[in-house]
Length: 582
Image: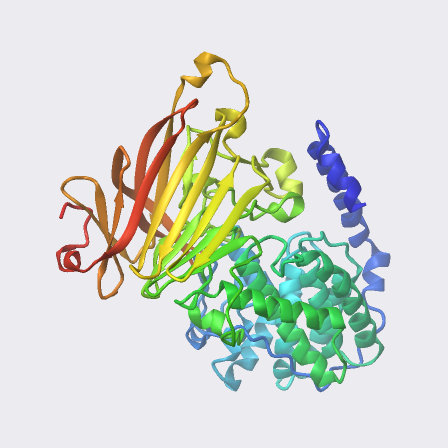
């Protein structure tokens, strides 16, 4: 069936046909979910109670957030709702769709419970308040991914909550929890989401006792085995190529593994292998500042959040590349390169078309980044395209298109990129590491290939780059070959970076936070400027800057831009924090 759907999308009008099939299936499932028979089936078998299992989600809780919720202030998904002490967040409109998802997922429960045992009564009140309004199926609060996140949150919270609950509240909470988990177990989930509800169902099975728990545990583990086979690439990374997606899956697997251990059940071998693979992948992805690359629909995340996964430092050398990324490590410099095509099809809902994009750290501080867009952020979808990455753009078009209109409402905002192959050659010597990279995103429209050479000089502690546009071998009319096309090379800066342009206009000095020295970016581009940019941090938009190099390329001869990033100790004291001249 998966092969058939893939082939269907390659036919003319295939994506619309797939959207129609999916929409029809969604309507049928909705009608079945609303039926009296289905609602009755969700109540059987009746849960006997809870096992002596207390799942622990490794994600760090925030007592300050918990105290704010206790006071009726919900700060979720970069939006705020203030209901006052003892207020009801369920009977009023949410400030945004992302806020509503975060609210109904109940992932704030750990924050509230971290305040102390005295808040359990308030947590029970909020859980029961949700049940009074949303206990019966509806497309939003019982849909993916809200429901699976809520089941995980409740599975971890119920052992604490029910210590304070009295009848009939206790029975109602347990029965509602079991119904939600059974709905997850009975639902069909798209492959890109299948691992998360499978983990949630298995986790509910660990918590619930008796036949109800046994059935859920078996269904959840059976589905998880199948889901993991498609969620992870052979190279070890997440199929979406999002570093943050790999981290989130690792957190959920750790939660389930701990619950299985308490229940006395061994994890499936494929789950153990997946955790080992994700551990190695995250070792590769965690950069010197303790954060992740902000690429392919994933944010950098906070170091404390990532540290909660307990990823130990590798005992040996890290692999040079993994999951389509290349990493270069110098004394002061660290470089991560997105050196593969974005995910395809159903895995591309958060993918970004930013070929050969860079993340560069100096002295363990972010210097050059991508904009860090993520699916949960309040940013325009255009930030998934090439201009939001630290790479080269040709002309006024992009190298990818986003699904829009009715099809996107059903299938999600998938990405269709214009490049599928990226050529990578890596060379290492005692004094340096260099990468030769190439992609053909601009070949069809402009008959040009983008080649990027990066040389990390370990002795000089500097990074030298060369971006070339080379003509393809395809034949073209003489007037086409003589055509000039503009190109732009962008280096997006982290919000903590201050930039100043030199008086001769040939270089820019960058100061990364409180780094001990500044760094100078030199270039032989025709034009260099400092312009505004944005960066996403914890779903919030932060203002930043970008260094922009511009030039013209002829289709028959191409073009070349050389640049160098090197320490510039003499300039540090002269950067005034504004985009001015030195």
